[in-house]
Image 1 (cartoon, rainbow, N blue to C red):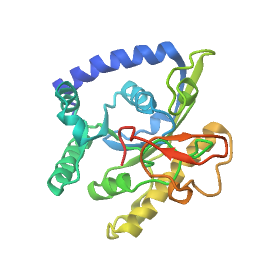
Image 2: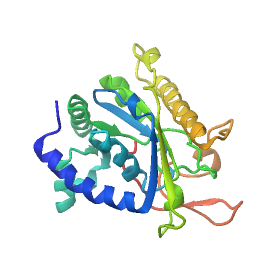
Image 3: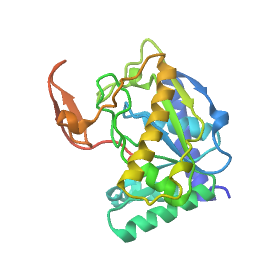
Image 4: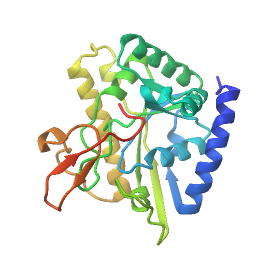
Amino acid sequence: MKESAKSAATFVVIAAVARTLLNAMMNRKWEGTEKLPSGGFIATPNHCTEIDPIVVGHMLYNQKRAPHFLAKGGLFKVPVLRWILNATKQIPVERSTAGANRSLQLAQEIVQEGGAIIIYPEGTLTRDPDLWPMKGHTGAARLALEAGIPVVPIAHWGAHELFPRYAKRFNLFPRKTSRILVGEPVDLSAFADRPLDKTTLTEATEVIMDAITALLAELRQETPPAERWDPAKHNQASHGRFVERGKDAPFRDEAGDGAGEA
């Protein structure tokens, strides 16, 4: 199935603006796009700057794969924004059982239409001082195992130089290059017949995070930390912004950020 005419038309308008701006601001190098499944899938990128969704969405849209994000339920109550979110079939994140079921149903429809559901397993911008992927949340693994949706790990690097984490302005010069590396779908077959309890979801999430980290290590040509950054071990909240007071100072958490989180 294809995106509805309404959804496709709305994406064309949004993409025209986003692509023009991104192409004007930085170069791009995309690798591994041939590994994207022919059908719908969950894309799980690393998360290191606020413009990540636009960067990854740009790549997917250019591969003729409509990007869909998880969005906070409250955003669907804002009049104009609500129309855009509904028109492009973005997925509301709701806490109620009925709301969660509706979100799952919408996700399955998107996959059947060949769309890409973008979920940031880290839940927010990484707290890792060197921008390596931190400990992940289990939302992507749960959705993948519940609905039988392939998970495609994606790593990107370079966009943070254009717009650093929690920055207030773009660094346009010298011109930056955004690199994206798409990996093979993550093999979660070992978890297919297991109960979707905390242990299963945590282990599946680790497999997904390992795949993302390996791709980023390849892009950066560096060795990632032996232990993934865990905000809880550093007295940091798992969601929201933080401000670093000094090089070795503790972090202070502030208001939440980001889209496409789980």
